[in-house]
Image (cartoon, rainbow, N blue to C red; front, side):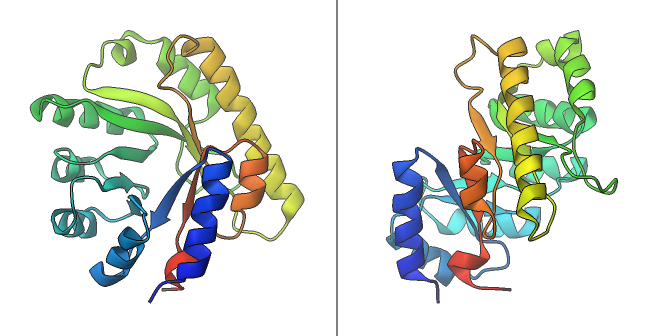
Length: 221
């Protein structure tokens, strides 16, 4: 059901480069995820809250569930008790809700700031200047239920390698600047999530520390 050879080679490829592999299991059945689990995969990414909440109880506690899709504020409470990492924090209001639900669940929820790195205006994410202003604010620094682990970006869906390299490199530069300016003493702020099935090698070359691979492992939807 899954590409065993590719997954094993990909796990080795990422391990050699100290890159975390998120197997994007959205829309895939439990049997496919179980196959990947048997091969040693422990991090899985989902983009729908309902699907995530249904799959979570079916697997051991050593599985890390990542929310990689756009997250609505009214759905945060569903995943707050168990989510390992939220990639897609794209607004201040969303982070405020995550902080609220984390405190209710007596947890600290790790998250990534989703950055807007493409030319299209219909993509979600922070602009660099907007994020900088927020990081200076008391409202961010007084949050006790969340932990910033780094940044995430969604590149343009294109075969243009120069454009992809420009977007990935730009995000890496922003990551380095934000880390040096606001998190230089915080070792937790170390994750740069960028790169998917078609461009993960380029993303890693540009500094990615976490890739999100779905179709190459599980096949197309």
